[in-house]
Image 1 (tube, one colour):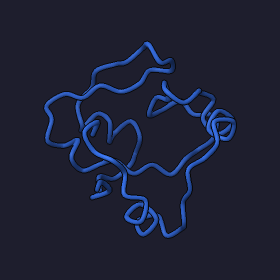
Image 2: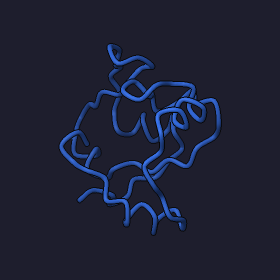
Image 3: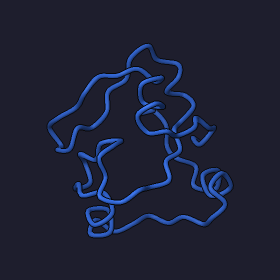
Image 4: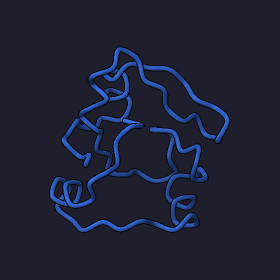
Length: 92
């Protein structure tokens, strides 16, 4: 959720691995997109995705669509189906 910050300790426990903030180059290499416009799907490489459970509190949500100036509307259910990810308590 845009109002939340990710709790990296929670995410690390969920995925069973330590995490760290990646460089912009690493993000571009792994996703094919630049920071600021990374969509939830269509990445260059398969990524482990965890969804903020608070997104389920909204009827509709908006996600980045590949550029800093493009977004698309979907429901939390559609996001889960597209990403094949699980909702979890990952915010502080």
